[in-house]
Length: 211
Image (cartoon, rainbow, N blue to C red; front, side):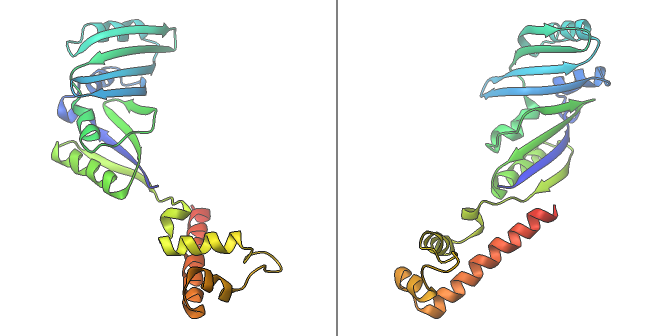
């Protein structure tokens, strides 16, 4: 399944959380979990900062924060949960029906978001960012495939039958002609099917090893 890492400017849509992070430019905000709702979101946030008390006061005095609970604070880190009804920076994620891979990192107004999904869903996310006028850049795109995704249904059927019936054993427990009989296709057709399936598997393996 493809994965994409996108860096986006939360301050471009007056994102209040991004604005807070800009006021604490040396801090690293780690969004550990987010439950999105139509009326807002519940967020668990870890912030690496020596200014924990000032940060908590900022959250408590922010109009967009409906409730905040501090779980832990020390000289290096603050862990808190908050509820908000304003989530402009999250709107593209919610509208495209994507789920981010946590933690999501926020530094000095910029979110670093990692997503995994179909090409269509990931494309919808960047389309939503553009429609919302949120500046973004794609940091990385990783193409990864399971066997069932890289092969057609017929190729996958051949591979399963070939493995289960010992075609790839040494010595072989069945012939290509026997596999053709099982799949109800001619030997020449099953030979082409085999080469196409094996070619896709080998090319994908080499591409993954070269990353």
